[in-house]
Image 1 (cartoon, rainbow, N blue to C red):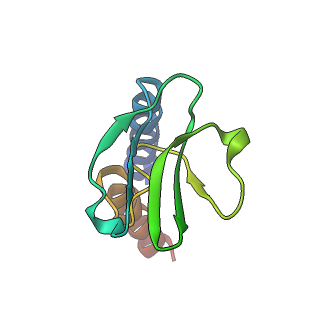
Image 2 (tube, rainbow, N blue to C red):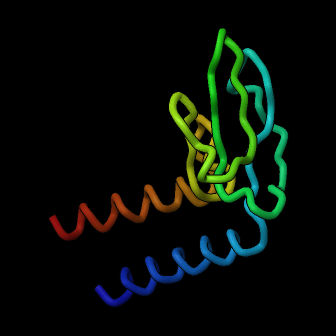
Length: 104
C-alpha cells in the first residue's frame, strides 16, 4: 500500500513540475481533430488548453482560465486538449485503474 501512495505522489509531483516549466497545448484550426499534432508552449498568463468545434472546424490552443466559456472545452495539463490519451493521462488512467482493482 505504501508503494502505491509513493507512486501517486511521484506522478503528482512530475505533473506539477512539468506545468511549472510551461504548459504545452495542441494548436490547430482544422476540420479533422485527429490531425492536430502541432504543439505550442503557452505564453505567460495562459493556464489552460482548449478545444472548440464550430461549423465543422476544430480549433485548439492555449487560453486563460477566465476566458474559458461554453461551448469551449478547457482542460489543465500538458497536451490535455487531444482526443487521443497520451503520456501522463494514460499513466494516470492505468494507475487509478490498478488502485481501484486492488482496493475494491
